[in-house]
Image (cartoon, rainbow, N blue to C red):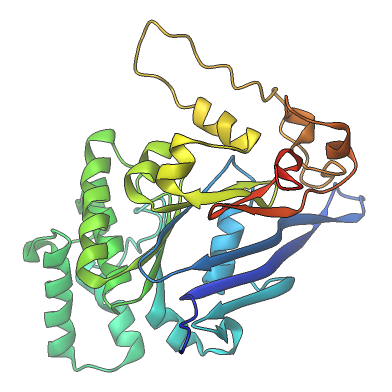
Length: 322
């Protein structure tokens, strides 16, 4: 029996940056992503969550081949991603970014922005390109009358629809969604989320979602990877992770969600006020300086990855079969 590989695989992927501290300071290594292994199956909506600086965007940029891993391998359908041509990668993977205004060229019309990928790949005549562009604009809820408009003539929600249309025009398999609703008004966010869900079903898409908004993650994702200082500390099915988080950091993240009851105080997640220095991460478990369940071993030894009922954890609390 032939075993179909995951759509994308990350195998012990790490990414380092050389950072110069001050005018005369020596360069130091910043380990933005450290030994990350993930399988992304076709149809997944994988959410990457964690505090700012945890490595989510760096990981996404490696998936897009904007950055090369310092070590480890990224595979697409079982083959090294780096060996594929740039044209093939762009056909299979596209991105929708956080701010739809800054990600769109203000000097180009909506029609030219959405159709640009088709012109670059050069497979269609101009009449066919216009036809395909109008079709995808209609799919995302953009009327034909805005074809010759410019981004500054559209609302924030409409601009994000333009960005989604541009990402879909080549019919990719994977879309990286980097905070796709955070720059939008609350009233518009749900419309864009529902559009992403509709497009996923219609085009059989796979999403990698980067978000600080755990409400968005719960609404959209089916699998969640929690990152802390460049590592995946917990990964599980979305429903399981939200209903029964196990890693202390995951519990703190979920506890930080503000309750709608005005009579309740701001939740105390007991993480302290200081975020750890990624240039000088703690010895042992990176989370131990902020963990209220740390043990002596946490301060000297990096926890190994543990698999528990289709959930992966990096925490000494769950070592040795606990």
